Structure formats: structure tokens, C-alpha cells
Image 1 (cartoon, helix red, strand yellow):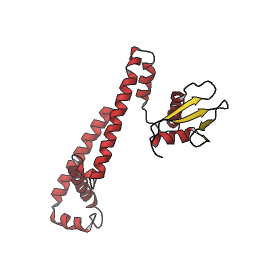
Image 2 (cartoon, one colour; image 1 turned 90 degrees about the horizontal axis):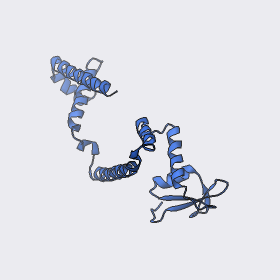
Image 3 (cartoon, one colour; image 1 turned 45 degrees about the vertical axis):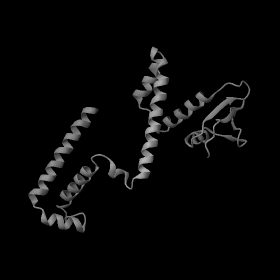
Image 4 (tube, one colour; image 1 turned 135 degrees about the horizontal axis):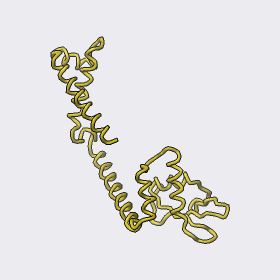
Length: 189
């Protein structure tokens, strides 16, 4: 769907049905969420009173996604949002959230541009080569105990030249790194 300057006008009838004024048909909350994902701004108004109901329906869409297990908002964030309604932070929170999401959108756009310019975007990540080398060493060490002993024909040549001591040292280094990571992760919980 092409992005337009003016918002897509959805009218809510007294029967609570939602009417798309562009296509002259009724829509659901999922349809509205789809319009928004496609980059469209949406405005939902009550046909009889003229009240803007956009915020109410957007919150309902978020609540439905959250209740289906499509959780995006951590409980801590939801708790802070509820808290902000009863504190002086109420005046700062909307601007902070808007600025945060703007930065997120800009960052995503730049990241997608960079991914398109690169052959393999993962290869450009800092530390990717070291991580790949560790994975290869781990797989060699793990596979050396099984019949056939390697992960590929190329690895077979490398493994036959390496001493058992080298593979054991690599395995010990990997075990130590895994233990360190587990300590860090348990510290975060």
C-alpha cells in the first residue's frame, strides 16, 4: 500500500463497526494494525460525536497482541507506564517515548540500508570472525570423539595435523568461556 500524507480515515458506527472511508468497506482491528505496519497513519473517529478514538483503538491493538503472547513490552516497562500516570513523570514520558521510538526507527532504517549494501551483514559485525573461529574450534573438538571425527572433509585434514593436546586446549578454553558467560547471565537474572 502506498504511503499517503493524510491519515487513513476510519469511522466507527454506533454498532461499533469500523468503516474504511477509502475502500468503502468494514475493517477489523487486525486490518488497522496491517495498515499501520504498512506505514500508513490511521485516524479513527466516532461517526456520531466526531470524537477522535485513535488512541483508544491503538491501545486495544497493543493489548490484543500482548494477550496473544506477542509480547513486546516487558512487565517492567508496563509497570513504569502505569506509574507515570500517577506521578509528575506523566509530562515527560510521552516525549521520551516518542524520541526513543524515533531513534529506533532511524537506527532500523540505517541498519537495513547497510544490510543491503553488504554481501553478508553478519560478517561486518565486530567480533564475528572470532566468534566463527570459536564455533569451528568447538565443533572440531566435539566431533573428534565421534566415528568419522570431523565435521567436513576440509576439517579432516586440519584435525589430522593438529595434536590431541591442541584440541583439548581449545575445548578447555571454550568450556571456560561458557562458564564465564553462564556466570554473567546468572548475574543478570
